[in-house]
Length: 444
Image (cartoon, rainbow, N blue to C red):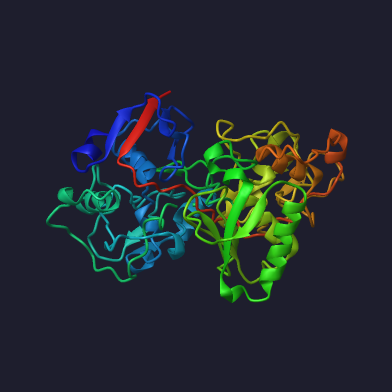
């Protein structure tokens, strides 16, 4: 903390009564959400994380920084050797979508404390990242680089702290590429967002995937403002039908944006993805080619109002078996189990029928099952609409007292088909990048 404060106007202070703060604890690995999301926000520094450079790295995530090697233009500067990467960690080497990042006009920084080293997540002792510039070392910095300091001060408007000299590479991508636009991690979500929005140095752990536990991530009074990108054309009607369906069973309302500062920007991007819950500002929800199905639109809107995937529940192993040997190695992170500290199941049983449940062969590398229900004969991932439990959860999450919440026997939930979450996992961008200079924290 002192290293960061000494080079910027950012200050870390012990929490007194602040409602938004970092809870720094010894969890399972080194990870943090990116930026301020509001409320109690976990930063894990567990076994093996007690190095100054790792602590600085995680605190920089919490302040709003992503990994340097995830910039959209990174392939101009480094080579990713996919064949050398541990299959379970390939997701850590994806590039970020330029629509949600901003580089602050700075060039690629090999020296950044946020850059992986050349052997990160290697499965065979060979390099996973190579610099295209000969003789350049990467990922071995023990403190903030000059460019890290410059970005930190630009982000928090500490102009009097900006170094006068910087070793920068020419910026070829324009003005986007590193920072979440405004205040802002495919179908996880961006959030686990919370899928968003955790980060790690050597051990990334996603957060809750059933419903957000942090009430700051809910849309106030259940009113969700939105804007359609004109390129959606006639597909807007299908998306509006999915909105109407959610409205018909809850007190949630989708309204066209007028002057609201927080809203969904629904556009035809590269895949089907959304942040989870309200991130703040212009919040992307992509429904691109291949996503124009009622159930897919419904699935992504459910992410947008605060719901994670059902198979990411902390207790999921009691109900399904994940066959990692059949999972496409690039998508292995989509089958992670979430931290119970940030998940809220809303006191509902596991729901095979949920619109938020993956199918039996989702992301299969070989045509074999990736998820197998422990209840024989139960189909999963074929839902065309919200399940009764989905409806009940929406009403509980948004405290819809005027709506009748139907009680469903557990045996019915266990014998009804699950959702068709056929979206593209991996692009849930999440965290509320609030430009506050004072970061409150507690140790726990």
